[in-house]
Length: 178
Image (cartoon, rainbow, N blue to C red; front, side, top):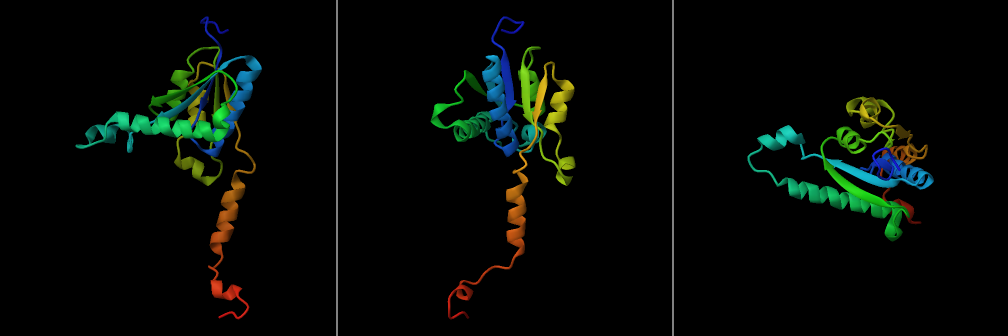
């Protein structure tokens, strides 16, 4: 039990990225180990952000975006756990706002554990705001950062190597050739 009298919680950010799925699985292990409830949080914003959405003349309703985010959360949870679920008490939450802020505001109890993927490594990381850094800086509870899998870079590396090779003409594969 936490200091508020409720069940302890493991709050995890879920986006569908490989890093967030690794964080989700780690949060399940932590929740199982401590008897905590799992809160899987997917944050969403309108395309272009809140400012652009507010200035647009004709925009889809926020309910449409929220429904799409909820569908994405269900798809991620289904891909991660299948029909059986994580095997512990859990809730899926869809929160409007930036990811870092949504996670910090959800994990608002001192006894919560906030679990986040460490995010991308390499030169592109400077282009994207760090959800992890925001959470570590602003959270009122412990934050567990889950590093990316060492295998995460393998498919991208393989794809780059394959795309650098010239296309194969099927006629070259036959005995007669072209």
